Amino acid sequence: MKLLAPAPGWTARADVIVVGSGVAGLTTALQVRSFGLSVLLVTKAKVDEGSTKWAQGGIAAALGPEDSPGQHERDTLIAGASLCDLHAVRVLVSEGPFAVRKLIARGAVFDREASGEISLTREGGHLRNRILHAGGDATGAEVSRALLAAVHNDPEIEVVEDALVLDALKDSSGRVCGVTLHVIGAGTRDGVGRALARATVLATGGLGQVFAQTTNPSVSTGDGVALALRAGADVADVEFIQFHPTVLWLGDASQGQQPLISEALRGEGAFLVDDDGKRFMVGQHPLAELAPRDVVAKAIMRHMNATGAHHVWLDVREIERFSERFPTVFASCTAHGIDPMTDLIPVAPASHYASGGVRVDLNGRTSVSGLYACGETACSGVHGANRLASNSLLEGLVFSARIAEDIAKNLPDFSDPIAINEPTILLDPGDRKALQLSMSAGAGVLRSARSLEKTENELLTLGNHNSEEPCVEAWETTNLYQLALAIVKSALVRQETRGSHWREDFPENETAWLKRIVQHLDARGVWSTTFEEVMGE
Image (cartoon, rainbow, N blue to C red):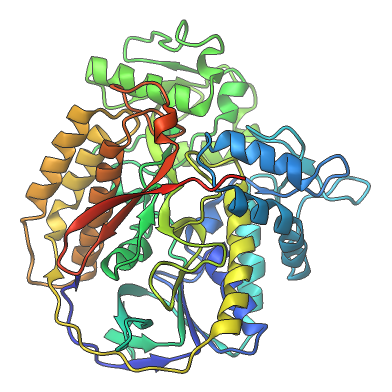
């Protein structure tokens, strides 16, 4: 199966194509170059507009004198709710310190103590101080800056901006030998073309835009995961979506990225109220508003469902020196006409991070020859059913290095793509909002067989709204549609509550579900589900 698109009008070539310019994509490109291979780095918008730039959290690594990879491993496994791939976690935590030191050698500057040592802090789920930050809450921006500087200094990395990747190209053996992509803009590479390579790496980030509210950038439409699905690659763990409980609600018609309203505010005395001014978290958990993130998100959604409200309110009016202590949140509010000193802030849960994605091995190889994936696009198994805070940037650093090494060892000669007669798909871009609202309502924070089946039926109806006019909006909507189906199908299959997957009709976790759900889409567009044992000792 492939997207309906015009025939390619131009051709580019490099040893390795890397799709995506976040921490995973940029690090992969630099690591590939260390083996003397040429790189074509394709990015959907401008090269610095991915999710990495917006990461307010830090990077977790066992660098402290009282810490160890073993302790980092334990915390990761606990957060993953018994669904982590142990071997992948051990790779992450044991190779993480070296990967961070290499990032520092490439120019990343992290916060330091007065003594000159790197400052290590703690976040939820970590029992040791092992989080590196840069500029307080600007870690992602600093990581992106350092990696981009290194990329720009390398003439053998060609960057193609404003390029939406469409589908994989395959040679006569079925190996991926490049991609088709659409470049927005004038010049010799305007419109649809093809990029040929000896290896292709997908690092396109998350899929948050499949929901009506998300903290992800507007470019996060899961293009890499959808491409891999259509190419016949397996995807796994896609039912596990982290939701942030308090994100600025901008209206049902809002699109793109919604601003985070930091949990730190509730730590400083902010509290949640409904339309009547009632603190509905009191009595639901001993810590009320300071309960764990998933508890707060579920409570908000239950209250919204019970009252018919589209959001709840956060009251920060009693926090002293708010604008000085929380300048990012203050700026987000005032930019949307809200004065936090006098107004309540409208908030609602929003999708934040996808723990699943394209299933890969410890070297980032997908189930399709020649195709690799890393970062949030991939499912390496390190996150299990729920990501431990600040492990995401580390995953991008560690596994991108392993991918580059594997490519260098196993790189084939160039091969030519062949024409494949297979069905095409293209949805009406006007259905995007309906898709997102349906996913948030039935496959969001709270799920049940009834809500998921309703969403699945609504999606299948939208799937009949075909378009014959290829454009960026139609391609993105189609990607979101296929990802939404994968999420709903997996969420229906997993009849338990585990990690970030919550079933109202199956509120307990079950040992029978200590397995990974794998989805596959064949060339005819037929879905199949299989299971994979979790890799323990």
